[in-house]
Length: 366
Picture (cartoon, rainbow, N blue to C red):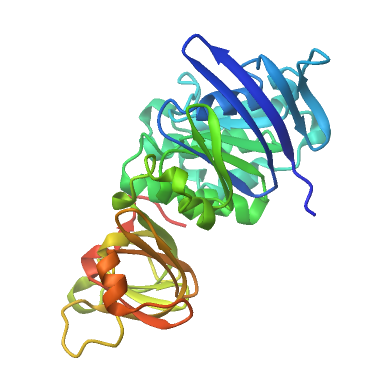
């Protein structure tokens, strides 16, 4: 059995709201999902130590950080957690380098596990180091905020809706960087969001909150279709946020070829070069299913996949298809019946080129 890194029972009471949540989070990326006012940020702030719970306990890797029974309350600066907010809280009077170095200098040398060069390279900030933060774009500011948090070599990274204020292109860029943090540094993360699509793209597990109480906790695929999400989640906006590799650019009509899992996708043009990584978005409702390859069709992408899961919801059906990575398709219950779909069988995904949205902010590269 895998030992949890964070184990807690947190009770925080306000005049018109009470958070009462008990859970244990393992390493990797854990998402905390819920509607506005469900207690997501309060939970994160209690774990960070910036909000004092009224009752309960918080343990991190077996160490007691808070206990109402014993009166223990470890200050936030002793918890060694990095915190990134929805709006980057950068020092406006400092340039990018000084912002990143601020936390690094406060970290004792014996606790420095991450080098400055690592975070600068990871977030591709070398060309921005001398610039003032008030001259940066929203995506650049969030990259600097992430770099500053990681420069402290945190034992845990807390992310409070870090993409909420960004547009689609910059959102894709930051997701790219967070995936690199996970892959290259292995820093555990707790990721607060009200976007199912972001949770699917980043998280291993998912805690769902409603009115300050946990609804479900488990792997993302299972939690996503829990009945308790029916009045919280908007499945009509569900996107597949997928990591792709650019295979070719400037082909017929200026289109690009991307590798996603085991499949090749024709997508709108991108300024990225072959071999570079990029995030793409494909709405679950924009994918058409077919039992065989259509003879004549305008859509440029027809991809063979295998059905791994079928989940029937109140008003639609989610099909989990495997193309080397998981792709979720939203169809009607009538379509499920007419196609007679079964888990384990092959099915073709038909995707129009313009339904493949390359989340490619100008000036970004990886």
